[in-house]
Image 1 (tube, helix red, strand yellow):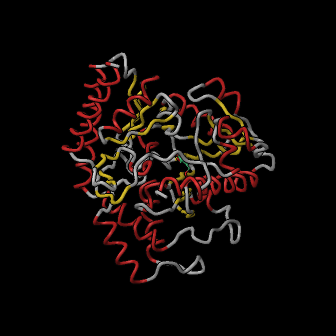
Image 2 (cartoon, helix red, strand yellow):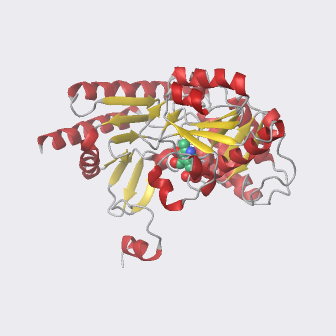
Image 3 (cartoon, helix red, strand yellow):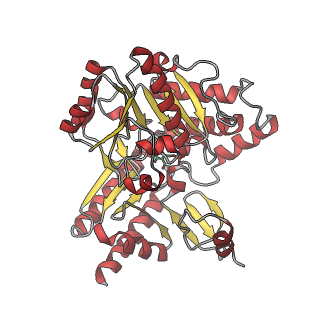
Length: 396
Ligand SMILES: Cc1ncc(COP(=O)(O)O)c(C=O)c1O
């Protein structure tokens, strides 16, 4: 039996697999069993920021492997403390709780918010989240994820969560009050099609916070750690979050997540309030340090800035050629969404046949999440194959 058939037999049916079997992955490419190279614009859904098999990650793996892999949270370890320090420096916040995934980082934020704000006012228990948001799929996080298609089969979810439309100031003003514990948001909503929150909306959240003293949680699981060209996407907006969640790329390809908070909020957690067997594993943390060291280096920053501009510029040129296909380009840096309506699955299929892997989200949006290491030659290959795919679809 081939791999995809065995996959269907033994693995629960929650994922749609692509029809290739990857034998090897290097840089921006996946190599299949017949040695065909696919240009990978999924990058592990924003995980493989340094591409595949990056030497900096491999070196860190070898080094940490020789010391130890796992000790448990009874022990303090250098790599974990160093990673926490790096995250606080990047975000301007003070303390970290490590998890294994993005959804667990959301769970940690929900628990911390609940405890921190109920100390101020026992009725301060309500959460506000946005429609079309994505914060994870565990029952707590799913209660915030504002998408009925993910929620319906799993009700009842946790109570006291209100969902409002993104960028709707009236709904925002009506929803917050003295009972609001926290507002959860993605400054750029990735999963629902790379939708960007307006500066007005974010400024109004800040203004309302001054009045109602709720907490602001920025979910940077997808948009964080230089994905949009800067450490965190909220840093180009007026938003000053009390908590930030990260995951995805943080482990250089292995699972880890984190909740970063101000010391004032973080102090609500005391011994035994929260925990995780693997959360803050020293092996993964060592890879996280290597990743952040590389991403924040001056050389990498120069590369990233140049490539982000080149990607956007090239896409704008293509959009000018096909205004009836690409009706909008949204997002920042290397997290871009192209609104292409019903063409989305057709372009995706045509691109796949040309060995370009594109991700479609929310049915009508091509979401581009290339490795941040992508170079000029690979970008040119992308533009050529992408243009050819659109041509082919339009000629049909
Ligand atoms: C913004 C955001 N938050 C949370 C999550 C959940 O992360 P995980 O899949 O690691 O649980 C995701 C995953 O796609 C995400 O994009």
